[in-house]
Image 1 (spheres, rainbow, N blue to C red):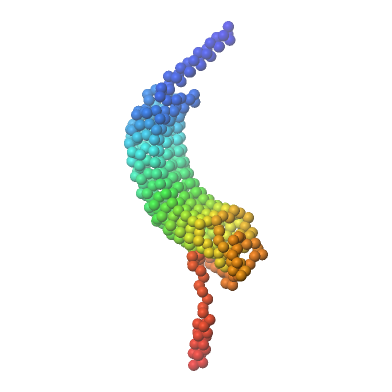
Image 2: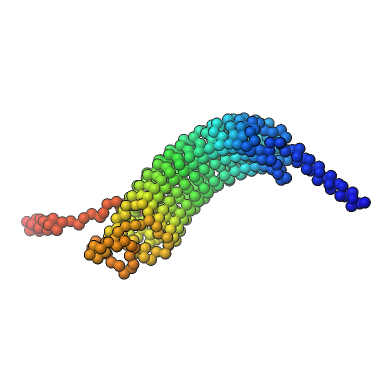
Length: 420
């Protein structure tokens, strides 16, 4: 009898639980036992009233929601994840998320009518870790917008309408990843990034950046990845990246860079450097000095005709070098490179050109150590003060030696005046 009673109570409990789950799940949504509700692509214009207060994860993406008020999520205090991306949101009332103190991730991307956010929009989200505001139409951010998010680690502001780096990061003491990709930012000032000391990954790709003030990155001591690709950067002053002592990956591809001097000399932990798709025709012989950890170097699709002597000799960890689509001129200035490739054990791609061997015979291969070239020019000397020397041009050849007749005239002229 005892076991029969237990069995009846167990069945009743399971039946009751099933009924509760069924009753708390809106008809147009799909629910999972772990308090997860999927209402995406349900044609919603307002929040369903049947959502259980115990819901932990709520997906409302790709609907027709327009306005969220302070009452919208008032009873959903257990929410950890909330998806509102792909709606028609035009306004978020101040305090919309005030009751969601346990929320950890909030997705608001692809709301193209969302242009401005009030300073108190995110008040109450003390445990929020990830915030996605990408692909909206935000043109301005209030300086205090993120001041209520002390736990935020990831912030995505990509593909909006911002024309400058917002000054709204002051209290983001936990932020590690920030994306401003695909905006209309033109300049990075000395103080633009001053409040991002914990940042590890900064994405400024596909903007219109052409001005970067010296000292712009000095307040980013923990930055490991910097993406400045696909901008309008032309000059790289030697002090530009000072302060990036932990940087491991640098993206500068698809800019308007024409010369490389000693810009990277302080990036002692740099492992990956992308300089492809620029207009580089000049590289200093010490451009990559001190980069003892450099592993990957991409120089394809530039204007290089040769490389300065010993450019790679101080790069013991270099494993991948990409050099394709450059107008290489394989003459005596590149003989050092031929010797280097004979002993290089990494992957080298893209250097395709004809070398002249004995009797002007064209050699279409990388020579072996025993091969010789008819080079009469003396080897290039290494500058003592490498970074103090002018950049080594690779577009033009070395200056021609003085004409013998001219030298004879000068000597005779000096001898004549010495006898007077």
